[in-house]
Image 1 (cartoon, chains in turn yellow, red):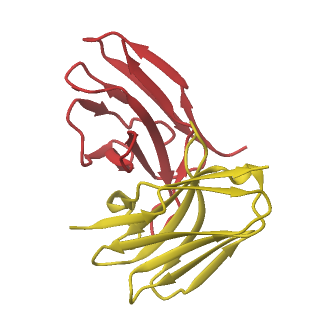
Image 2 (cartoon, chains in turn purple, cyan):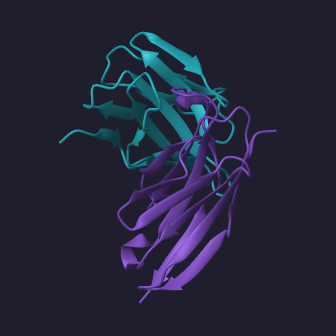
Length: 114
Length: 113
């Protein structure tokens, strides 16, 4: 069964600290992996999209890594800010250009405290 | 500003009534999608459309209907046949071809009272 599992389920950190969120997937075939940020009560916003041949991709203070062999990805947030408080969702696409088959994780809820 | 707009943000419905959620985009995207988000669950696809006048059922289409008469618009009707309609509904759009990034609206929270 195609699944995307994220850990931890929730995380609390102090402003200015770094953190790393994990994503393990059992999706086959595999084409791409995406990380989204979702503020409470809002729609998700794309952070990164990586294909199976990419190992890392950055978007400002966000850096995603991908190990297609172990089927693991991580999202590293550097120098956290209060505005980073949100849910971070890992999404796997089994087919290139086929968004209707995206498999969504449940997300990691991050709280950044002052 | 280019973007995707959902309205209303909050919607209340009495049991037995149909209700229509609006989704409009000015990104010139061909494909549009409706998702449902419930606590403790990942996003689930309700319907999608890759071209005007064509749409396909997603994973949880029962109790929902859509239309795609214009490229910019993809309204979702939640019918009285939907057994558990209270949820957060998200509309998204993408260009076709390749590995397209999905752009989401701000969502509509539907509550059945």
